[in-house]
Length: 387
Ligand SMILES: Cc1ncc(COP(=O)(O)O)c(C=O)c1O
Image (cartoon, helix red, strand yellow):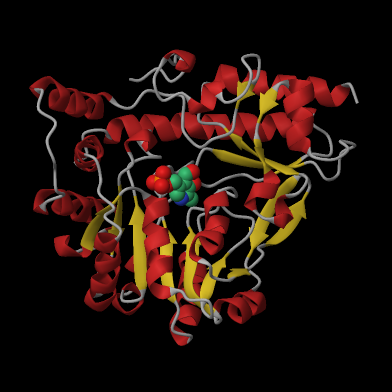
């Protein structure tokens, strides 16, 4: 059993962005990595590599491709040919390559806002239009849910070269249903739009939720999908920068691979070893415990907001360790991100970075101990009570 209540002091390690970006008295609940140590089998695999002493070049080989294919089969009964798997230095580089290949100044990138800030950078980096498809917010009591407005979806997506899907969704924590995914896919196929499905959070499932990759829905849909996955969020190895693009359609894959090679996007060997170990299944019991702990944190967050933060709305995420809070109905004047940083000494992610609908909202990272999460919420509550 892993005790997720005990974590190392992250101000003292090497990869310390989360804990040192802000001043020392600020509690960091922002960037999306967790405070928990990486599971032991992965640490041991990386350690064995270091202990050998020679850190030569490593080209991702057949065994690695097979380990990704085996993981897809184990999790979803999805049969992926190993050659359909390409290694990338992460998911962000993975969707950037896709945009480079399949978009143009006339055919942009469609995204469902509010959404992960890096999705908004694609337009700047590639010089292409961004087509926002705002998700429609519904509120019941203090709980927010978001739905697809199908008219807007079709109107915007048909002008795109790629539809960049975030599933599970950051920051909203939604797992889209098979029905929704099928309808999205049908519309994209009708308009000849490639679906790039960012599934980086797909193994961080809360409660007993299940996940289906977009490409798993049917062999016809699979032909139009580039699936992006990585061990980084699930097993907390984001600093090792390793991801995978799964592209069963050979024509798409060849175009994608050509650009990947063109950009010389190589993956460092510790990331490849971590991925192979992560996908081998040796960390799966750790993952079950992690997801249980994260579910407890999600419940704490939702209960706390409901009981002690009147006027504040929250999502109830199905997946991820990311909460999304709406302060537009409170008497916080201006940006809640600034307010909590100054008055509560808690650093959240500013809702605005996820799109203009995010103004007045913040994202909170609950991938930490219950004690740290509670401390952050207590500080926020105190700051609000002093208004
Ligand atoms: C939806 C999503 N995609 C991609 C990433 C980052 O991917 P990578 O570090 O593999 O480039 C994140 C990190 O927060 C994310 O939330």
